[in-house]
Length: 248
Image 1 (cartoon, rainbow, N blue to C red):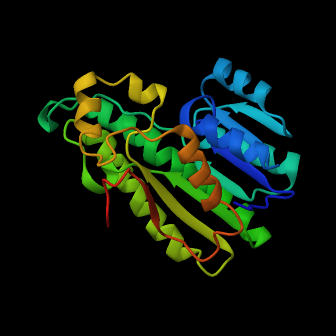
Image 2: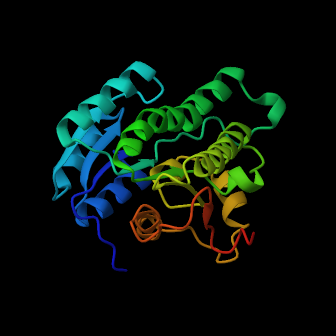
């Protein structure tokens, strides 16, 4: 794939591990100047140290609007532009439980990270992209946001909200040079998935016709295309990465 990111500046949230770290490494390898965001200071420092590109790391809570606003101001002061935003930060919350057993506090916590965090980053990045007449925003959703995973109400509902946001934002900014899309992976082999109960992972992988998890490399390759200049006529769309689970 011939993707050109010459001179571009990107933000990746959830960059300390998993899909965020993989996408950050992919973009850094393509020459993107990166701002890496996460709450995990140690993990962020480790990933930052491995990247062979111009990058800065920021330890922030993406659910805190003041922290997000100040971080975006800092990134713009450093690089004068933001061309790419990839919202990877996410949590599963409690799993393998019925809806009537879900803790209201847990539901709020999952929505705060998965939906509100992505909303806040896009809220403060979009004005910067509008000034530059260009931008690529990718919200990492989930196949559960399309189909729902039993036992994962908070996670599935929050990812449905992320998909809805991508649809709305894609339409709102379609004529500005900015695209906004979502990516809906099935089970990707990450530490977050490995921490789930075995029966929950089996429930999800049994639904995948390929009968395997996706790899971080596969996910990072698709994400890199979605935020590339070449992906210029697709917006408000949810790309599937599901091993055949989703066919719509």
